[in-house]
Image (tube, rainbow, N blue to C red):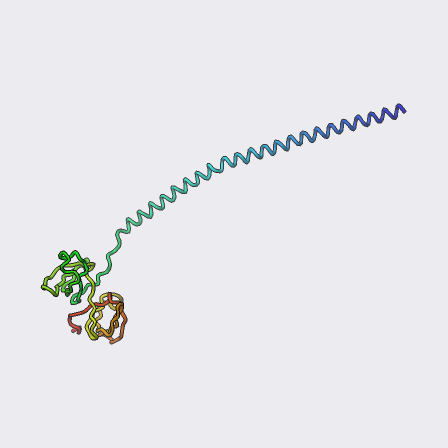
Length: 204
């Protein structure tokens, strides 16, 4: 009996020792796991701290690039120069009306006249119906006069038919139907595209 009891005590002692070893192994493994987690947390914190600085540098670079693009656009616009002036619609022998209140202190406002000569830069000499004064005006101070009478002579001053002579067939508040002298076709044109014509209708 004593021998059997001694063996049991020895086996129990070995079992206790094995349990202590297992606990120790688990403890070391747990510590290692915690270290990995801690290291991972530190690495993630480092990444988080480093990321904003990198993004900030990218933004600053992007800002410089955008400013360069804006400067290049401004330079290209400066190189293009000012917008070209509108094409002149003036022509000799057309009737016009003064629409600038500043001309002669407003005394010629809405007065009619005839273009007798055209100069570069949208300027022309106008012989006024009243007083027969000849004054030089810009086209911005004038508008075309369109006759109401059917059969009245007009000149096309704008568009694809510019320079064509025609006669009025009908007129509304916005458009005018005319018959071209060249081929007798009927054309519907805006009032700004035609003007009363007092010159010769034949081309001879």
